[in-house]
Length: 281
Length: 266
Ligand SMILES: Nc1ncnc2c1ncn2[C@@H]1O[C@H](COP(=O)(O)OP(=O)(O)OP(=O)(O)O)[C@@H](O)[C@H]1O
Ligand SMILES: [Mg+2]
Image (tube, rainbow over all chains, first blue to last red; front, side, top):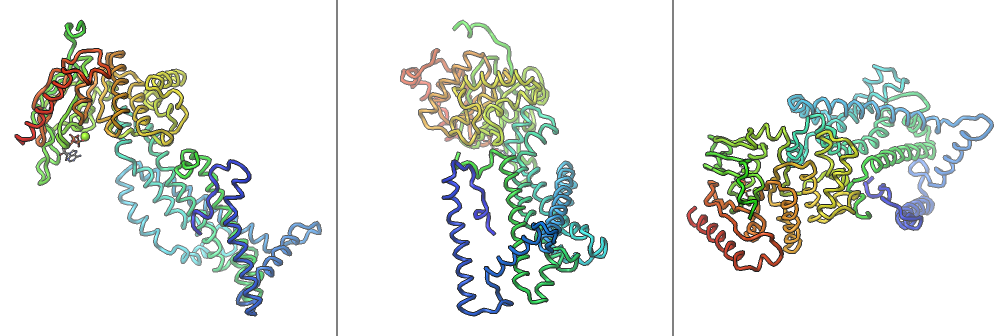
């Protein structure tokens, strides 16, 4: 998942521009799907190895019909998607919020940040997902809080580290400009350090948005309520209903990408000076 | 001529000023050695000398961005720290140092914001300063939408915005082409004549120093010392044609020879 494929067109001049921008991406997607369908059919690949896209798509349609028809029927897949999204978003908000908060506190006092950073960087390379069973113990297997906790811990460290960097890695010349005006620390924070940190914070949030969906789904592999994507995937796979498992994977991918795009959109909105907007200006 | 007859008060005085970086270390550098200098109100002083001779260091000492190792430095009768707190000077750094996240006008307003001017005054003053540097139409652009020379002019507008009595400029036109640079020189002279501000101007260009300044301070390479202070009697008003007068050539040659001698001695 590279950044360029998911980048929003910076300034859509008109509808035609948008079409031109997205056409290659859509062409690649369609080609891959057609090839996939053809290969599975021609090579007669068993559905438990790789189901056809059409079969997966049919599953998805069926689930959406269940969820949104008027008979009051329910779709476990759609409910699972909602539950996993809730865990991911909840954990994201908690973890990133705490990360940014702690970063502001540590960046304020250099001594604390110097003492904390090595631990944060070390913690950042620990596979935190391994704590999932412990969180299940702490908060209860079916309590969304156990997954949120894992997600929160996963996204906390990159967010905190990047925010501290953004607040402290300020161009010395830009800092001297502030000193030449005898600006107070408070003013330096708001007029220089925070704007300087925004690109760092957003790049952490973009990574965190993807990580939070991954974290939630993988944490669910260790157990959780029936209506969550991770549990759904494991159960359908062990029941050899691979088209349904794949449908759930697609849903997980969709919420991951949507979440990422929302963060990206917020970034563009909050930082109109962003460098990636410059070429088309 | 009339202005020169009146003796103006001394606004900057340096006595036996030393700046040694990493004192006592094996990598100690004597950047400035025994600098003595007196600058009167309304002067335009150029600092000229080879790279690494301590021009920026002298400017940064005056700006209280670094402390002298030894010696006395007075700005408007105060120590540099107090002068900085009193916002006695505006500084133009070698790089434009604009904030990317602020529009041009917001960049110019930054010092006014810090100093607590009301919004309407800020906006009015910023527009005035931008007009002065001929960038009135670019107020709402972002810095990266401007050329290097335009950015540098915004930095000058910003330094002038709060009307400091002293303007410190570190090679502000170093990155400009010859033609733009000469135009900027004209603009700066115009501003200086209009406002009566005291300017200390670091440059590598001898013609630029002669064109702009009332006195040229020639410095020698490490350890940085003042070799000579050249009174510049090229007559005012200075215009494009001034650069082609014999007096101008004479002065340029004088400074060039001083710089060469200083280099040979070192
Ligand atoms: N922060 C510092 N730490 C150590 N040495 C320094 C520092 N700043 C400057 N120096 C040294 O002081 C000397 C003078 O530096 P300065 O920047 O004042 O030179 P300059 O005359 O402005 O040169 P240039 O024309 O290249 O800008 C140099 O030899 C430099 O190595
Ligand atoms: Mg310098």
